[in-house]
Image (cartoon, rainbow, N blue to C red):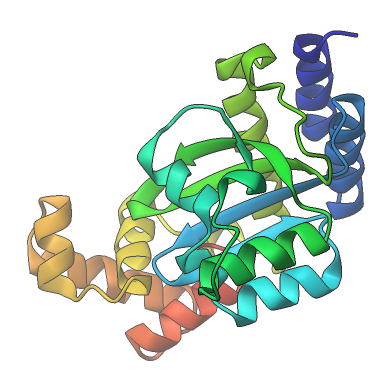
Length: 236
């Protein structure tokens, strides 16, 4: 099957996925069909990074504890361009004792030497990317990937993971309205009522009204508690 055909099949498999294991299996199968060993989905919101991947456990721990997302050349490139691209660790600094050199060496040691990345700019200033990686020097399918289908895959992964994160079922009467959800999302990003009003084009009083309604629906006494509950229930 062609890369395009494999992409179509992957989109279908993701749509049918019922749990994290099925999502992981679908992505792993696609990776292997294209000559890659592993995959990594990453979402970055400010200083917060969330990942879902098949990378070696020790590497994920090193990556997060060392704040490597601040210097990761793949992330840097994803910010610069918004299309599918190929990368290789062989292009990164190979001399010296800089954090970037250490990042390069540790990535290669964990079997991450080259790959193809699909980046997408998310809502509220977030960024998402899906990477397929190989320990080989070069496995480049970027020129064979249909850009639209590649983005479909990334968004399918994003929304399926978001559904899985919603661990607590919420009754219809407790569902937040679109305006309430928007105000809650900006609150999770540290914005007060005035700042949210400026960003959304509504008045601070209306923002506060939506936050008060959201607090009542989710049984939160304060906005910080509202933010915590929303995150815990996978609403944001």
